[in-house]
Each structure stands twice: as structure tokens, then as C-alpha cells.
Length: 255
Ligand SMILES: Nc1ncnc2c1ncn2[C@@H]1O[C@H](COP(=O)(O)OP(=O)(O)OP(=O)(O)O)[C@@H](O)[C@H]1O
Ligand SMILES: [Mg+2]
Image (cartoon, rainbow, N blue to C red; front, side):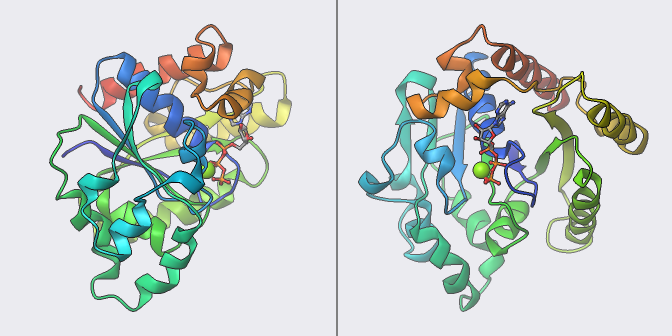
């Protein structure tokens, strides 16, 4: 499958999970077959689409560590019309258990190769670190999408991440491409945010998504209803922005 997008930023709380769930639902509204893969032991994208973490029978942990068939870990989210492979706290152990395994950084890539169902787009929700789990995501993916909050330290973290991508390109994943950098929780009335945004466009020009996601409380409320914002309230400014972002990204992907 050619559109495997890792949503990464080692900084916490920048909107990775919100971006994954809303893009998944937005792509599905545009008739794409979408799979979300929760690679974060926090399991936020799992609970964010209404799955009780305690009720999960088969999670990504079982696939990566217990050699369970990946096809048996897929759940369908009826209301948002996409599939998800869930995660729970078990996954935090995977970080340590993977270390002892042969080809530990290729586990996810090899598992995804066994998917029977065809997907147009697979979104990987990565944890806030450049850990072995994230590395598995970056090696399985062919695109990365970086949500970024336009604040003072944003650019520093981004440089580390882009260095990691360069390393991957020259070794473990020569095909990986930066799909885009998307500004999240953006407040146009905030001078610092505007300055950082300008700097980002200066450094990364075409890699910057033109669409930004505004700070919008409806997006933050949606997960407690077990729904992505674009399904919970499709008229909210954040939802409208995610629909526009989905359109922009599909163009970039040539879909
Ligand atoms: N555009 C937005 N407007 C308002 N709140 C938002 C927006 N995007 C995300 N949030 C809220 O900000 C918090 C962090 O977002 P989110 O969980 O998506 O970030 P994350 O990068 O996945 O975090 P982590 O690094 O812990 O996985 C959440 O409470 C979320 O609901
Ligand atoms: Mg998250």
C-alpha cells in the first residue's frame, strides 16, 4: 500500500491524535478506505473513537509482540466509516520487549504487509517520542505528516525530527517523504504564532500545508463523545479546517 502516513512529532500534545482521527473521518467522507493504527501506549486515538481500552481483545501490542495476525486486530468504527487497530497500556511494555527481538524496527512494516483488506490510506498515530515504536512507524510509512503548534520551541523539535528523516532516507527507509507540516491550534491573533508561522514558511515553503487548524473547543470536546470532531460537529471551524486539510493532502498524494 502506497499511502501509509505516519503522523509524528516527538513533542507532546501538539495535535497528532486529533489530526489522525479527523483526517481519517474526513478522508472517509471523501470515499477513501482508511485504516487508523494506534501506535501510542496512551491509546488516545483508540478511546477517541469510542473504544473502551479495557474491552480490547486484540491490540497492536499482540500483533507486534505476540505474533497475532494483524487482520484479527481490525475494528470498524461505524459512525466515522473507518477501521482502526487499537492500542492500550500493554504497548508501553512493547518498547522494552521489542529490544530483544530480531529485526525489531521492521515489525510494523512486516505486519502491515500481511493486511488482506485494501486501504487507500493508512494513518499511524505515533507516540510523543522518537522511540522504537515511532521508529517502527517511520519505517513502515512512506509519508510523514508533522502537526506543529506555532510556539517558541516548535522549530527546535522540528529540526531533530527532520534530521531523523534524513537518517532514515540514507538507510532504513529510502522512500520516506515529508508529506507536509500542518499548523495546529493556530491563533491568528497571536503575534508569536504569526511570527513562527512566517519562519516555517521561510524554511519549509512548499512543505507547509496552506490549511491550518484553528484552536477550536469543539475539536477538544469530540473525543469525550467517542467521535472525531468532523463527525461530532461538522460545522465547527476546526472540522471545516480538517475537511479542507484532507482535500489539500489528497491532492498532494495524487488521490
Ligand atoms: N485545534 C484544536 N483546538 C482545540 N483543542 C485541540 C485542538 N487540537 C487538539 N486539541 C486538544 O489538545 C490536546 C492535545 O491534542 P492531541 O491529543 O491531539 O495531541 P497529541 O500530539 O496526540 O498528544 P500526545 O503527544 O500526548 O499524543 C487534546 O486535549 C486535544 O483535544
Ligand atoms: Mg496523541
